[in-house]
Length: 133
Image (cartoon, rainbow, N blue to C red; front, side):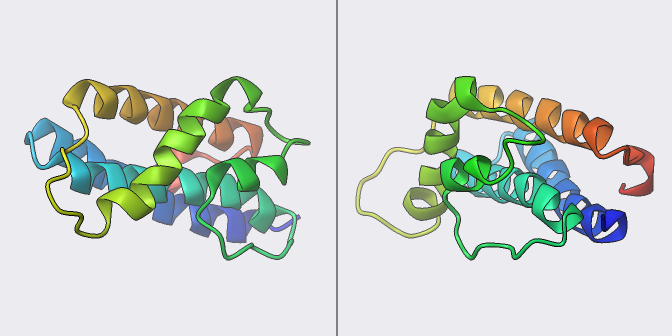
């Protein structure tokens, strides 16, 4: 077990998540918030692999990552949401002509999911959130 490495992944995830929270409160562009949320979820999930000293896959596909960590957390009910969040990495990171920004209601839902996931993973790995912020 490598709790320290998991903490590092969760600390970086917190940076993305807290940035998304600030931007959401400031009513900033939802595409930028979406990318921050994607990176937060990705790093939260990869923290389990870091904890186990497993190779961290070079993928941004959250459903694929979630399949690697089922011994810790089951996200089968959230697969559709994970697919949606994965799209943020590609669709919101790069310019595409005349694409609409994600709706604030959608971002609010993903933000709530990410906040809850962060809390849950900290509990599962017995990591004090206050050490990360």
